Image (cartoon, rainbow, N blue to C red; front, side, top):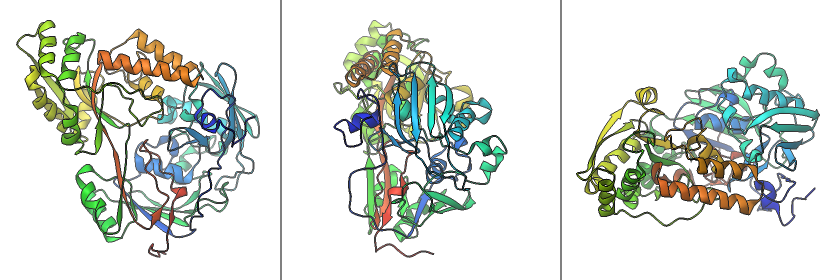
Length: 519
């Protein structure tokens, strides 16, 4: 089997053509981080669920990372790295994968981790009664079998090259089989994981405290003794707490607050490009968007640079009507789309709208940037002949009456771990959230073929062709991607914003001697 420091390490971790694959937890040598101390982290909403299989929001994903482990982790470069699995390898056609577990790992209750725990966890994840978001995000799993105490065999419904990355999904945390087969409700009150920290106290509306797990399988990490997760529903109060030194790390800063917070004394602003985007859904199965000329006309009406300033307040990048940007592997650079109202008007006339077209665009009130995009689009598209009425509605009403049903509304989506993840979530004909009803057979073929091959160059070619098809046919207008913004005190070391947005890796964080001493 290939070793860690072989020339193909990146390929091995990413799940590429260099098969079989192997990952390990070791990494390049860095200066030794200082051990000890308490990190106080602020979040903007309560982590209402403790059961990691049912986590739904970012503060809950944070707790899942601190208290539990998966088979793999998502590295900052969006590749898979080892967690509980120290190595993995597929069969020839990528339809079966064998994972080797680390020996000697224990859960927080002292019980030993075995392959039976992995099999039981995935049985729970795949059971609709569990209600785990991971069920549709961990890949096309047919079965998970314990071959022996440290060997797991995952059989798939079809070839899938991205399985190691998919298994790093936020909810795919391994839980003792005894708990899952007994009283699963314990997971609402206790944390029984193998993660770098153990639960001390859980008051979800106010404060969650965790402490270093002395039995964690990595003897170097975590560096911190303790982490306090403090809930601030009010963003102004949260920012003030960081600036006054009451907290050390603010995981999410709004674009409106970022300049003020990041320039304050003792504060370091953090910013990274991400695949988070706003888009305009065009119902390709309904008039007028069943005509590609109308879709192309709207695309040509959009000034993308202006939208980055107006909606993202400058903290973002233009989109080119494909959900893949530079934050993703397999991104293909395409010519930037520039606003051309005259060309847009010509296309509308060819489509039978020589005097322009009247449309109603629906925008949920959450987040507020949806309505901002709608209003900006209304003004920018007027010279091209689009007369757009923007209708804002409560998010619950939008979900019930518009989402997946309406022909023209504003969407908002987080980055997914892989190109396949976002394409298969939203744009293939069989996707669970097939909003556009584009149903393009060639696009489906390209995505399916890319999923089945381990050849890196071939996958890049296939995903590039899929992006070009969306760029040309415009089943959706994706004009802006948002950067992720955070802030920390300058004595915090090792924290790196992850482009996925729901990955934190606080076991890599340490504090310098300048940090306040907290009991």
